[in-house]
Length: 52
Image (cartoon, rainbow, N blue to C red; front, side, top):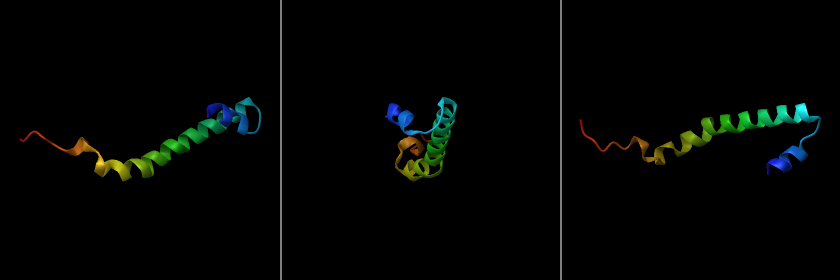
């Protein structure tokens, strides 16, 4: 998959690297903005089993 991305992007090596970095930042931002908040209610991390 990474090789396909590298071949599919236009331009010289420095531009490809910059585009891949921008794509990675966009994917991480999308995960933190939409994906993680959507699945948070289904995660067991907020279930407390020890009473105070």
